[in-house]
Amino acid sequence: MTAILDNRVPPPLVCLACGVGMYFTARAAGESTLVFASQYELGLAWLCLSLILIVMSIRQFKQHQTTVNPLRPSQASQLVISGIFCVTRNPMYLSLTTILIGLMFFLGSWLGLLWLAVFVLYIQCFQIYPEERAMQLLFGEAYRDYCSRVRRWL
Image (tube, rainbow, N blue to C red):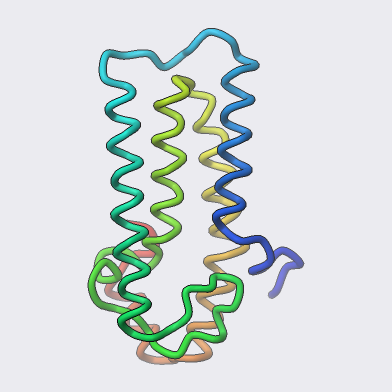
């Protein structure tokens, strides 16, 4: 089953939209609802984690000489199952999620969890599921075996 939004909106753009939503929701709520001593340091740690995940992911794709473009999963030439892909099948989407978690801490608002949920649901339905269908068609049994060993997120 294909939906009109399948692989149509670049995931970083979805992340940006949710981040903007987080910002305006936090501003509209007024007073911070998530305040603690090291919230900015924790936010920075999440952002650093996301940067590490992104770099590791892109590096793996480049080493295997396959596409990084999430809008064209059918153009994948290799099934990447090493490095960070031994831990999660979707490290780039996980990194975008950690960016939003870091932003939530910076903004100091629990309401950011709503936008985090919107992001995860959107990416799961309109990006990950269509990619999984494409990988299944391209790589068959090797992809099914990979899916049985490695979780979608963590």
